Length: 410
Image 1 (cartoon, helix red, strand yellow):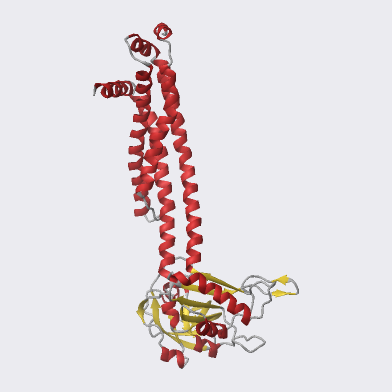
Image 2: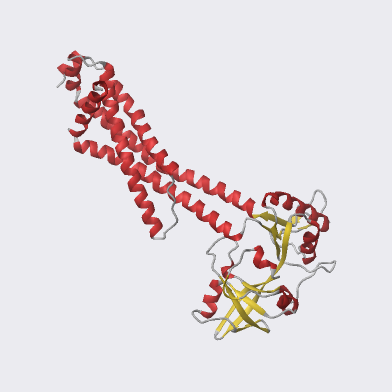
């Protein structure tokens, strides 16, 4: 027992005899570890927040949007192709397996007049299935029914942000809005989903059948009704890749695209979007961790510097200990234990500081933060590793001192 207690007690005496120096050494590690914890918690929080928002839209969602068209070898801007049609949506519903629901969507910017408010906004015509496909929740009021859809009722459902803009604190249910040359009635307001991909908060939804009566819907050369996009729900999420491949093949055939012609549409599943964003946020988290690791590395260099100074100042003490029978291993162990103790203490305090910073950032709703056990263990392990790495050379240097020359040192 004495074999282990003596080096530890000697190292502790060396640390406490130079309190300010030890404090400054620990402070460097605290800053580095706290930076690692807080920055990586921000990265993890951003990833969790993005995934939660995407999940609220439904992991079984697949969207088909317009692509770019080609004319005489020139590609137009993305979304400019006028080849995605309502008949395409019907063909997908009939011919592609694992597709439960399909919603053709047509959007157009229309002038809205509410009282003294006059604005232009995108109005989106959709079928009733759109609500289930996009997992929309009604805050109050109702979504339009199949009956209203079939008769082309001029009723609308507002996103939460649109409601605030047009009506403020006034209850909009039953209120009328002049939309172009038509009068429509508000029957519902959707719950807010926050600022995220495909958020419905800024949406104005109307039955597609009513939209077709109110505006001139463009048609293709074959007479098919052009739409803006298609949303569909996949019955088996594991088949999302298969569904996107089948849709791509079907639409290429329907649009008469040759083997060397690019798609004039774009098919994306939420699974694909989720994987892409996960990879992006993981890269961001690693980048933040790397930035914080630089601070930890600087702290480690500070440990090495302080330990070298400590060896220089205690040269005579080392000589006396060697003259009294201390081995190179004893001296080496003493200084290495000092370095590890300093960095371990700094690591523990740094974890607490980093956790507090992350909690404050999250509580103040600046951004979402997530402190995971893996990040904490990594930060403490790295801080101890830095103590071993940067403390090794000073400890080894101390153990190699010649006792006679050390005793002569002033």
